[in-house]
Length: 185
Image (cartoon, rainbow, N blue to C red; front, side, top):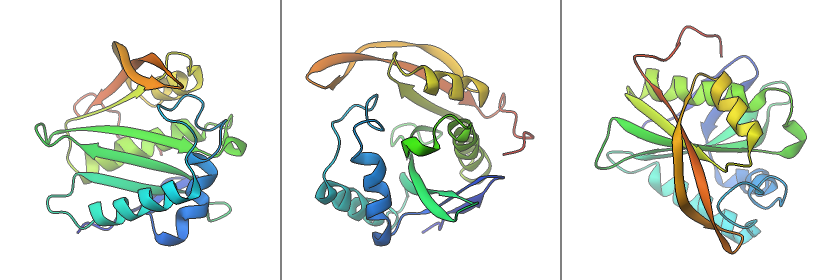
């Protein structure tokens, strides 16, 4: 098992633990934080199950799923969750997803988190392609992905069912040979 612990200037990433359920529920259970995510706010019990599945996935060989706590290095507290899923049929490629508590929005934390995830994927996991999808209405995520160095690839029509309706997704990606890994994270 690869134990993950990475730090940037303001944020860190580490393996989730059972003690992170409340902190992750502050993201997954918050209607504002999940507004653009493809699911309704999660219950505390559902977040407990997500953490249990993450702990199990961390033991898998080869490991394909990383569910990581996002740590604010100033306060040393978990303020969000980051997910990286390596595609089984394309082990050079992974999808990322993330969520931050709304009280940390608007300060560039999303951009810093995406950069940290790209560094983790390219430098530590030696991936070639990292991609993520966002709601078309989530312009904050669009800006964060673009500033972090990801390229908008296009739209997947009726990609997910969210809030009782079909929703498109906008795909962004970064390639290892184009990535500006020298950027400070």
